[in-house]
Length: 256
Image 1 (cartoon, helix red, strand yellow):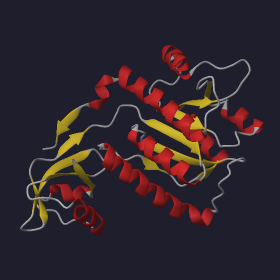
Image 2 (image 1 turned 180 degrees about the horizontal axis):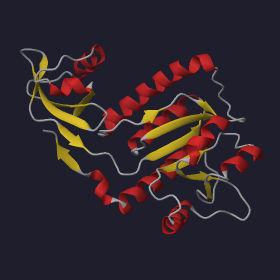
Image 3 (image 1 turned 45 degrees about the vertical axis):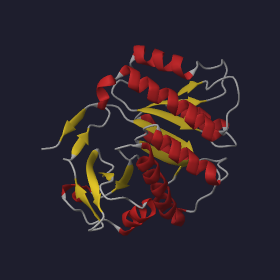
């Protein structure tokens, strides 16, 4: 089904006035009379509409529905990678249900983003996230932050139950085993689950030492993964773990 991201207020309208970008999408789709389109606000609300060819607009065909957020969020801390690889990471993280993305600039991050350009980068990344949510049937948009330097991200990591792929001695547990162990020990009960993915050049020894005071080192398999592959692998495991351990997190209710 075709989907459009809209402001929340539009979902309360029987025949909403759409933003120019949404109108452009509809022209590309070449909708036929009576064809259904779902509008969503990225905050859990959706509503079904039908296209009226004679009026060239959408007309409500159902009530607004609200999908509750998960009880625990899934957070991605990731060092920014080059070009399309980073865009791909944002897209796949959105598809996997991440609720919060924090782009990180570490000492060995190849991409350098001056402070004056970080707001513009965030806006562009937000559009990538929105497109991914629209195409993947997501109802909650992840929040994506402006890129932050490594020292500034550490307080955010401390507030989560974070796992980081790391080469360490002795070798760390596989991610799933570490999840099971931390669940039994319950030191982070009630805290969001998080994955931290390093840069293409890896963390410096000093960065890794700081990070391991706050996060659990894990193995992401027997081979060395690209940063974007590590993000996809780790997030898939965390998302599956959340879905299996908290099946009540996907409840649906209808707004009055």
